[in-house]
Every structure is written in C-alpha cells, then in structure tokens.
Length: 420
Image (cartoon, rainbow, N blue to C red; front, top):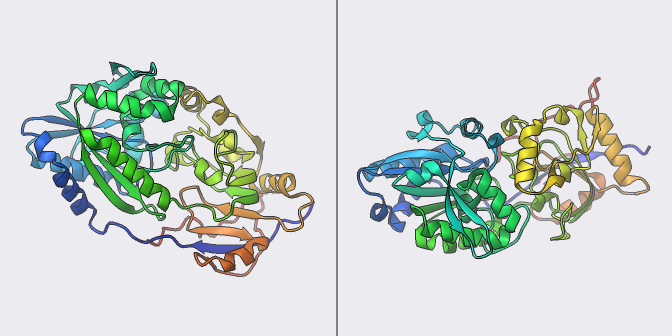
C-alpha cells in the first residue's frame, strides 16, 4: 500500500466579530423586545435549554433567569431536546448538567419530564405536543442557538421554531415533526404552538466561526418566526467549513451530540452522504476516531462515516442511539461502519479505500465539525492553501506519528481553544 501522505498544520481565519458584553446584550435585547410587557410579578416562567453545545450557555440561561427575577417572576428551566438523553427525564437533566446548567450555575431549578400536552394538529396532519411542565407555567421563554439544520433547507431551520416544536415537543413531538417532514411541519407546528400555549418570548443566539456569540435577537411570541428567519440567514453567512469541496479522505477526530444534532454536521462533511440535497462538499471517504463523553454513548450520525475505530464503537449506548434514530425516522444514521482496532489500522484502511491509484491524495484531518480553525492538510493541498487569504500554513510537511499500540500521537493543536 502507498505510504500515507505527509501533512501540514493550517490555520483558518473567520470573522472575529462577537459580543463583548454578553449579559448586557441579552438584557438589552430582552428589554427592547418587551419582556416587561409579558412577564409580570408572581409568574412562574419556564426557560428552555437544549442539547447542543452552545458556548457560554449557563451564562446565557442565568442572564435570562435574572431578567425574569428582575420582573418579579420566578424562573425555572425545562430541557427541550426531543428524544435526546435516552428519552427519559433524568437523562435529559443529565445532559444539561454536563453543559454546566444547574440551579447553582443559573439560579433557576431544572424541571425535567417527558410528559406532554396535546395542542392539536397542523394543516398537514402533525400532532403538536408541548412539555407538561412548560405548559403548566404562566409563561415560556424559548432560548435557542440558530444555525443551519443538518438535513433540510428552509427559511427557518435549527433555531427558535425547532426548539418549540421538536425540543418542547419531547420524544412524541420530535417523532411527529420528522414523520411529517421537518421543513414543512416546523413552521406550521411552531405557529400552532405559539397560538395555543403560553410562549411569550424567544431569544436566539448566532455564533461566529469560532463558536463565540455574534448576535443576540429577541422577539415577542408573534414575531418569533420572523426573528428566527432573519437570524438563520445571518448564521448561514457565518458557518465555518472545510475549505475544499472535493476530498479523497476526511478524518474527524471526534463526533458527538454536543457537537451537532447529527453527531457530525452534514453541512461540513457533505449533505449528499445518504441524502439527496446539496452535492457539495463531496468527500469520497469519512473516518471518525472517537465519540465525546457528553454524548452519553449516543453516536447518532455514525452512519455518515465509512470507517470508525473500535475505541469509538466500544462507547456506543445502543438504546440512546436507536431511540434518537427511530424518533427521527432515519435508521441509516445509526448504521455501524467498518470498525478497525486502532487509529493506524483505521487510517491505513480508509486511505487505501479512498486513495488507491490517486497520485496526489487530497486528505484533511479535523478535530470535529465544530472546531475548524486548525486543520491538517496533505501535501497536495498546500498550493491551494497558500492561494487562500483565509488560510495560513503553519509548518512544513511531516509524517504521521503512531505509538506502539497503533494510536495517533496527538500534538493537541487541532482542538486547542479558539482564538476569537
């Protein structure tokens, strides 16, 4: 077999625009939107918290809770994450704890349940469900990161409307949204839920390419859809990517639910892998080396890979994986790829599959689809990197380094803290 190509470290630069005073920006937006008009003294107010790894999310939730308290009301937190956490209340509360969301960190208690209220049906026949604890509150404030969804395109994708319908819908609601088509059903179901529940306000967060808060947008219930749409357009303009549409092999160090709802963001690895949407990027083979601890064994999205290590496979919690995949009505995302014993065996095998007969292999290694500032490029990509003003080649080509057990010797650069 041909030798693995030598690799170089490359740094990718994104817009550094970000919010410097995050609590101040949140308070300002909540006030501008009119929180004091809808949150009154004596109320109990539910605040949503989801299952994505949002930067500074405990601080964001705490700031919203503080604003609720300043209005004379009592805040509490509800997990809004569909079927994640094994579709059990304690599992969802545990996901929040892993993100640092607790009564101690936010000043608001967490009330987790999988019980839901049936709010009726949409025009296309989907039943709209709503978290029982949130429904019993006097008001609900929806907090969500807004970003492109991993499997569909529309005016609103992953954001406030999805948090209302899939997140607050719990397992039953998530199943209904997927069964009737996310792109069509989420806007209908969100409008229905807003009309038939106690949602009073939404707060959307858009992050920049370094996963730092870039923009905060708040809106009263009647304006949530439009705010979600506007923030979605902004988010798409800021989405970081691997800077090549065509590769022979993409190596992903780690996948997980805290990185993407799909484990690996298909916007990064290629939506065409098992789907019929965008044809770019188009990567011939994808190898994944590990699973985050925050995933609790839920390796949903593993089906998008062609090869994985045994280290990753040994961490899978099949109940959580299957529950997530079946709720989404997408069993393909739970299929287990070819599994190799070590990093070396996996990389050698993936390289042979992708690059046999290729004179200049195009190979990129990333830490995760959420960490794209530092990357490793094969030598064949160096000329393109030098021509791209957003890329900086950091060193000279060097050989892969494996230890005696066949695992990569990691210098830590790919996953060091982002610069912005």
